[in-house]
Structures are given as structure tokens and as C-alpha cells.
Image (cartoon, rainbow, N blue to C red; front, side, top):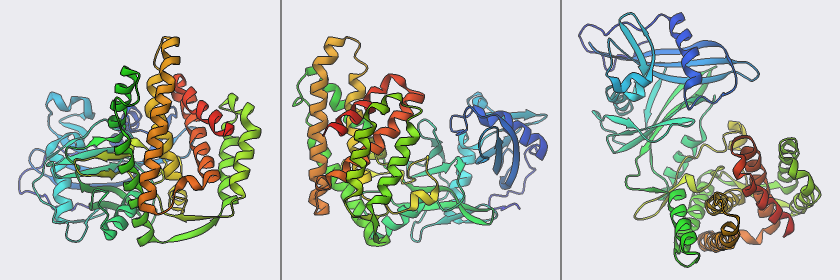
Length: 462
């Protein structure tokens, strides 16, 4: 089972825990991690799928562990946990310790630069055990790179490798090929300039199915997240009360061009198809109905929402292709030269099969429209003084309208067609996204619920 690529002829570090002790420790440790996606569900069992030793030295053992976690009230989930084992650890590793047992300290390996270098080297040289490390042809990945975790962990853990590459570990593993790898391969084939090139990935067979565990791509150094950039503009506008104080429209136009370029490249490699609008409308309608028990205020709009969706259903066929699927300002980076789209995994609540199903590019456009609205209105809802809020809300809405218009103008310049022409379908996709947002806010952030509810009210009034 051991890959031995990093084996050194020295005594081994303290041995890892036996299987039972390790699984027991993980059962207690996993629910405490930010990326654990089953919050609120009690862990009832942890079962080992893969446990492979990747490196052994006199000071460190690195193991890659995949477990299936049984949960009360929901389906089992699969997680991967890179583990390091040392005889002792410095205090900076204390928060990441899984367990201490005798002379062994077991910890999250992605918090140890020495352990990260093991993964980096295996991507560069290849690893052919149960966990496979593969590189894109011509990637020329370097060995000897050390790394550190980037930002706050959510569903994934991203690690910078020597300021050159970004290794993203999918903490919760979904069986199959991850769309993020699949679409980056296609975009690399097309020579797309608006994504960070894919350099390699990790995979393993789970339940006899090739399954993506991680991916490595170029690190976009010196970039700024689109959400951060847009919000800086909003803050300046609201501080002055004048929408012309901070003109973001040139950036929005360039972003529209970038999104259209990515769509064109995906279509050129993976093709297009035609789907009945009625099927898409039925899916949106079903999600609205599911949201009704959560969002009581939806009921007053329901007849008009149904009419809006019916209007979209009557548009005939929809041109479909592979798309980003979860596009918003947090999924784009601004470099000194261009906008770069990231995180092509698709909407987390959907299965891989659903994410791979071709869809209209209007879904991505609608996602960005909703994101512009959030960038502005998230500031407005935080204004405590009601008179001040009433004074600045029209300014914020004008910022949204100007930048949505600029984004669509930029998209049109590259795509050759204006997404606003497909008015009924675009509104239906916006409604779908706004209802999704309303459910999220009701469950997680009630003070922001008014943002999607106002969007729903606007959409049914148009």
C-alpha cells in the first residue's frame, strides 16, 4: 500500500494509531472542522476506505486517509484527511492535532509545510498507489516546493505551493470526476486566458469509480477577489451619496467579456445542445415549491412567480452547454491584466450528474446579476438609521443597474448576442437564484433576507 516515493533509510517516526483508535479519534475531530459539511448531524460511525502512507522519515509520517462517515438523519458522506504523525509538535500545530496517543501526535498534515511538500513532490513526480498523482502534459511541476494554507477553509482546503501553484483539496469527496477538473481541462485545451491553467490532480477509485480528490493549478498572485473589488466601489459610492464617485462600470464590462469568452471556449471544446424550455421551467418551479415551507413571504408572490415561470416555459428551445454553474463575484479574480474565473465545481447542493447537465449560459449571467445586487444591498441592510437607509438605497440600486448594464454590454460584445433579449428566461433564472438565496438567508442570516425578497418582488413586478 505504501508508495515509498519519499522513503528515507532512517528509523521511522512514531507509528500511526491502530485503525480503531484512528477512526475513533476522527469521529470526534471531524465535526469540529469548518469544512465538515454535515453540521447538525450526529456522527454514528466512521469507516476506513483508504489509508495510504505517502512518506516516512525519521521525524514525520504522512498518510492520506479517506473515510465514509455515517450520519444521523442524512446520507453518509465521504471525507479525506491528510494526516501527519510526529513524536511532538510545535505550538503552531496544536490547534490542528487530531489526537495524541503515547509517543505519537496525529495532526492535519495540510498545516505542516514539510507534509505539504510531500504532496507537491508527488504531483511533480507522480504517485501510483491507491491515491494517484497526475500532471497535465507539459506542466513541468517543480519538486521541493513548500506551502501554506490559503484563507479560511470552507468545503475545500487550498494550499499555496511555493507561490507558484494552488493545490485545492476537496475535503468532502463526491464520487466521480469533479467538474472543476473536467472544465479546466477543456478550457486549457481551448487556450482560455480567463482561467488559471490546470497543472495536475489527485484521484482514487472509490466504489470502483474514478474519483477526483484534489487539483493543482497556477496561483493567481497579486489578484483581488471580485467581491472585494466591487464592495470597495459600493462603500465609496455610499459614503459620498453619489454613484459617479466610484465608477465600476469599466470593470463590470470587462468581467462580462471574460464570462462570455469562457462560455465560448467551453462550447468550442464540449459542444452545445438544445433543450426544451419547459423542462428548465419545471425544475425552477419545483425549487420554488420546495422553498415555500421555509419562506412564508413567498406565498403572496406565488401566482405571479408561476406566471413568470410559465412565460419562460413558452419560449421553446434553449441553447445549452457546459457552464460555470455557481457564478458570482466571489468566483472571479481581478489581476493587473484580466478577470479570471475560478471554482468550476458548480452549485454545491446539486449532484455531480446535475452539475454536468448542459444548461443555458443565462444561468451564469443571472448569477452575476444577483451578485451585483448583493454587493450593494448588503451594505444598505446594515445601515441602522432608517432615514439614512432610505436615502442611500436608491443610490445603491443605481450602482447595481449601471453595473449590470455594463456587464451585459461586455458580454454582448464577445458573445455576439445580448442576454437581455432572452428576457423571460433570464428573469426565470434570476428568480431561481433569488429563491435559493432566500432559503439560505432564512436559515443562516435572517438580517439579509430582505435582499433576495426585494429581488423577488422586483422580478414579479416587471
